[in-house]
Length: 544
Image 1 (cartoon, rainbow, N blue to C red):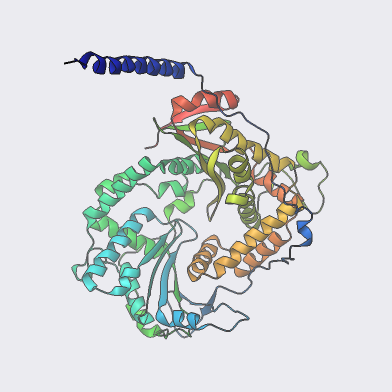
Image 2: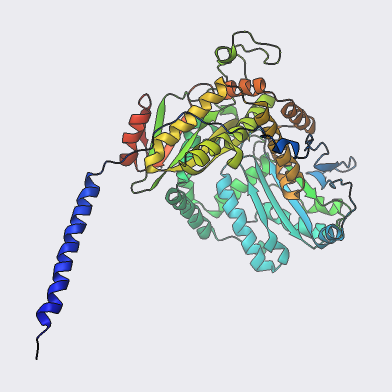
């Protein structure tokens, strides 16, 4: 009998040895390969000119006119001392007949919202109050077994707290549910579904850990570096000590202080809706009575900083070891004294269109709103923005980069945010800086201006078709002190926007050095940043 054992075992051993040698060579070669980072390139702009022969075959779109009708109609009852401003959702006018679907939609549900607005000062601990009100809604839903409470909606900002319910019930019943959230003992009284304070503390702590894990901590640092640690917006949020020790009495005090300093706005469906007849006398009797007297304005309002932290050529770095991408936040605060370097950008002679460019002038509230809205959209409106077109579509440095306009009563800013692969970090940051420099020195084409107007006015028109968006936009106007006349004037300025005017706004808003914060694997990105941004100082920071 022939023995085949040496043959069958010998070949696999030889192959295994060869494979090990090959793997070792490959690993050795990889270790010796130098990483090549993405080179920087001059900024590239999209063309908004329609090429021939397409221009002869495309229909004329015409001028898009912004909405002028009020979002809500105010109901005034001089014979009654209402504790709230009563609004009715204005019916959207249309040249077409109302469809049966619209009628059935109006008759199936009623949306009632109760909003607390504090325009002079931010609410204290609104992050705590948001979690507590959500927990209260859960407790009420279990206790009352009312289907309306399943539609509970809450939208909290530093200056507004808006609670809403949307269900087929009578508006008086819905109103009665909403005012329960603001009763003096709503978090304590056993007869009104008390909240689980332990669960609220756990959620607050969990949110803090989730923010650190997800990278949202970069936004906390952004706000601190942009406004300064003593700014009211930084003093009313993220009270870690209170997160740990919060009890029901403290929670009730937070709720009552918010209720005391607020102006109230009650929004009802239009009077044509089913079950929309509202009992004013009964609503006054149900209105919460405050048990503690608090000042109408928050103490922080009187201590508002009048100076902005001076930004220098410094990049703040948050270390995230092992991360495969770098989070980027870059932008400006635009509500402070501006350095008008535009004289050097477009000539020392300033015509009437550009106005007075003295170095001591300040942006008006209209200019802040116009700058914030137009420049954030010009640079970062997703697919059609300058940054997305160049850094994503042309160069592939990111999956997306976007602009955000934060126009708040005590501060306004423009922020551009996105993420890049570790090896693209330096080129990505340089690309953003190059575009910010370009918009100040080179006028946009009329085609790009027209596209910008179409986007912004179209966005405004779309928001008017959604009752919730209309309500949110209306509350934002109240918080920032804008009237309907101001909004119409702002839209008129937008329609009249020219390349020179946009360049003036860019030089005003993007003056000085931007605030730059990166979150990534510091040891891997520092060599690239040092190479591509040698004039910038790098500083490691740790977020608490």
